[in-house]
Image (tube, rainbow, N blue to C red; front, side, top):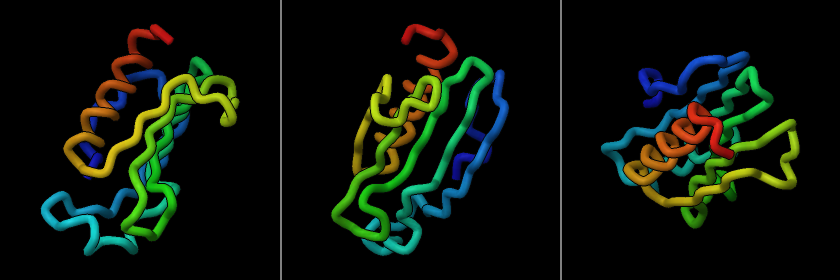
Length: 103
């Protein structure tokens, strides 16, 4: 789903395992709603991470975070949503923040 998404440059590591069909209700794809969906590590010690919490539950939400220096307890940015459209917007905003380094 995000194979053609522009995550910017300066990427050291990219993990992408999103099996969600945007044309199917999320409630019918619970087995695809997991914590480890996307992680991008950038050269400037920033990490973009996305997952569904709690995983495998239709009661959860997508969480997108920007992490600096592996400080997972204190994300620089944290955005939550329950739909694909807003998820894409949140990812675009986070990538824009990373590209501009305005954190």
